[in-house]
Image 1: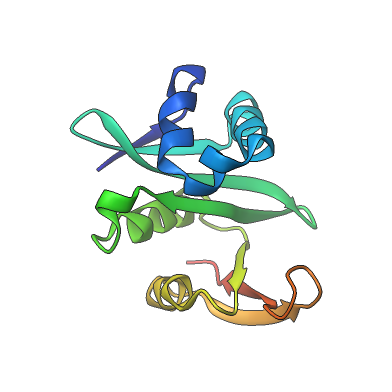
Image 2 (image 1 turned 120 degrees about the horizontal axis):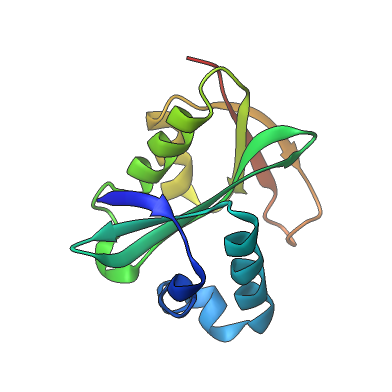
Length: 139
């Protein structure tokens, strides 16, 4: 998988990859904004977008992986881990955080495999599904 910054031309493909975006226009606007801000990274296989991730600095001024999305036909193939590793590489030397719902066991396993450590919990974002925060120590 090749990873690159997303461009406006990628927007339709990223919306198709993201089942939430396909049904929620506000996510489509978020993706467009992330592309405009230069924080959206696309994973291509054979020249076709199959995954994307968003890395911002909006978590108390720290690097934060806002989102990782892997297209349905490419899940469980290591592409999510590749995006996380990419973000770790470009954030070398700084703190890197992310979060996922307590119910998202797949993402929790991916983060632990990538060297992230649990760092806390945020309640009341989603009913009965706390957000677990993870931290990646600097390399």
